[in-house]
Image 1 (cartoon, rainbow, N blue to C red):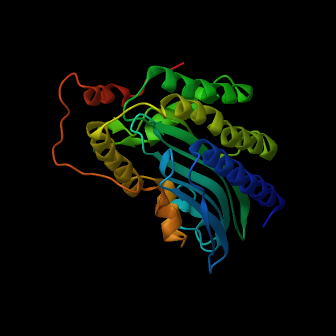
Image 2: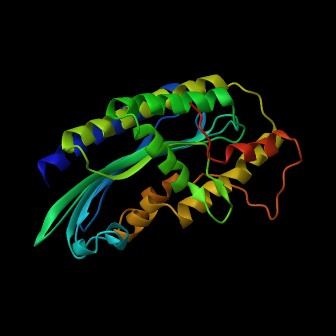
Length: 300
């Protein structure tokens, strides 16, 4: 593994520790259980899951570093010259599923990838981002989320937030439903412009900035009263999360194709979910209001 991959791995291991500590602190009840695993073809990881907490019904924060050959198809779709090459991929990925329907579900991921093949110049890139999936959205929460995202992008160029925000809206779009998965955030991939140090610093800022974006929302909404109606709607909308992850998500596809640990890859799915045929919320209800937030718009 290259020195660049070592640097990325070191940061990502520490990031997993810091995020887990922050989630445990705000949850106040449950702690993470860790499964350390190895991949026979190369690499391994640490899967950490918190369940039945005071705030989070389930929270998963994964670190992985996998390597080997050949590159899986999802990694060579745009680089056919690398077919048959070797790869190293390391990253942290998390999904937090709160119990209270007024707290949004959230996902974040930061990762580093490099590939090599005899006769082809080695390549590397970064990717990641974070996105928010509310059930009963509040404008101030969404504005806060996007303000943090904009501010961490600002040192890297005036257009960075706009590009990565738009990419997030496009990536987390359920074509078969005609709606976004949530209210977006940041998404980027194949990032290598400006050199390794600049890209590494951006990954650091995205990874560390996630907590600044999410934890204040949890604090504001954690004591909001809710009943069976709100809970049932939350479980129904979680179905959209399942649909996206199993149909479109590139990370899920890469993990399964590269022989990753299935239990860790599918950790992102909610612990409880409900599907209902032909559900339509009542007109002018709080549940119907959500549809207006599932269309890309400017928040800051």
